[in-house]
Image (cartoon, rainbow, N blue to C red):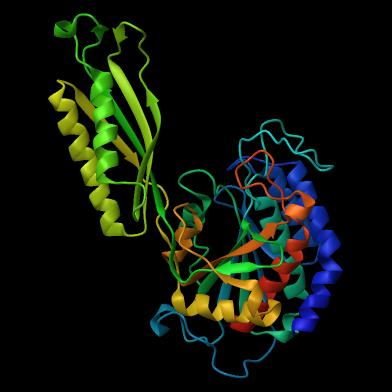
Amino acid sequence: MRQLIKSKCDAYFDEVVAIRRQLHQHPELSFCEKDTAELIKRCLASKNIEYQSDIAGYGIVATICGKAQLSEKPLSFRAPQARGTSSAKTIALRADMDALPIQEQKDLPYRSVNDGVMHACGHDAHTAMLLGVAFILNDLRDKFSGTVKLIFQPGEEKLPGGASLMIKEGVLDDVDLIIGQHVYPDLPCGEVGFHAGAYMASSDEVNITVKGRGGHAAKPAERENTVLAAAKIVTKLSEMYPENGDVLLAFGGFVADGTYNVIPSEVSLKGTMRTFDEAKRKALKDNILKVSKEVASEYGCEAEIFIEQGYPSLKNDVKLTEKCAGFAKEVLGESKVKDLPQLMTAEDFAWYSQKVPACFYRLGTSNPAKGIDSKQHTSTFDIDENSMKIGMETMTFLTINLL
């Protein structure tokens, strides 16, 4: 099976690279992925792969049904009552397809032609690889049983996240488990990485507005010091939550639009809060509200707090992730499969992981010898395209073995 999958990856590699370059050259922002969706539909139709479109905007779900008979009872990841009486499993594979509002700086022959929009997070590669996996699985339907749902998801980069919207439209209703693959420049091309358990943090956006009487800086009796109150709020919260713990609170926006001798009537703060634990997430929100109001009151001001709920923590099912890591070692060799630490970054794949057993793993994409070493969300980000063959091979092998 490994050799068969490898030969299929070799056969489709050039086509998948061409798809990725087409997507990279024509990136589209979150929930605006119209042309991207049209390209995906053309690729699926060219291989006679069934799909449904216009899900949660421009989302697409393709379906491939295996034709082989089960030779043994499949590995179960969900409680028996969660599915019907069918013994064959349904596995979902997910790729996101939106780009970022970044002006690309790297001079590539397939550089973005959309000014200020760039595939700086690798979603072009995710989409192209999942199409490649679809082509291979479609060719190998006689080799596996069960069903594969291929989810091409819009809007990963923008709240509330396309994953949550697709779930509301029922994409997970008949799914036993889900797998996601994400490019990762922290690993070199040729390697993959896994982390079992809580892997990525929840993410919420914190907005605090401190209000009071503005006025002349030299007349403190006639105004409140909104700037000092806001600074004290940031300082006190930062002391309560130092940045070396498993709870992160960081402020990146502090706008006090006064001048040398004018204290403004409003100061706005913007920050992010992240953690792996829902109880700690709630406690942090409560403390932000409490501290902000108390400190503002000390300075005769008021604090208005709005915390926009973001993505939950991404939890990799331990049993499933260990199984996937083992299969990856069979494909790539033990030395090429790495254990990864937790990350404070967030991902809307977390919504899927809250509903069904999930495995979200990383695909190494960097190659310093080729000058490919920029991080994601930067204007010079790129991948070693040879990594896409590794990605297709790994995801296909995991899927067939899990089925």
